Amino acid sequence: MGTRRKSRELTLQMLFQADMGRQEADHVRRTFWDERGQSVEDEVRGFADDLFQAAIARASEIDLLLERHAEHWRMDRMAAVDRNVMRAAVAELLVYPQTPAAVVINEALEIARKYSTPESVNFINGVLDSVARELGPRPS
View 1 (spheres, helix red, strand yellow):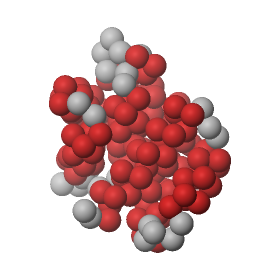
View 2 (cartoon, rainbow, N blue to C red):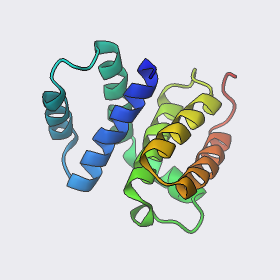
View 3 (cartoon, rainbow, N blue to C red):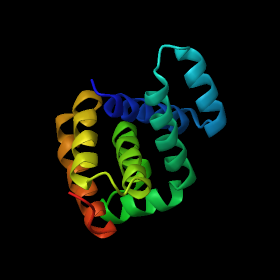
């Protein structure tokens, strides 16, 4: 598994912990990395931390985008894994404009295939594609 993919999966796990445990971001980061010790490479940890921090810092903006593009779905009605996969992906779309949207979306779909249901993959793809179109052109 590539460095970025591993970082994205770890970001999902931190967001899920914060969401389901209703825990503060600093507490999540501290306990999350304490449990993993030195087993995570610095590069993997750095990108995961960046994405997690961006998703937390821009949570309101991200959730508004997701709700607007997930027609007839409120965030609290979405599966926890799905909403956090999408939160991580939208955070990356917002703070890493140099990464092509197709790459961000494809990575989110691969992670959803691993952690969610087959039906969720189509839902996530549609929502993220719509968000990416709203956010505008990116490098390809």
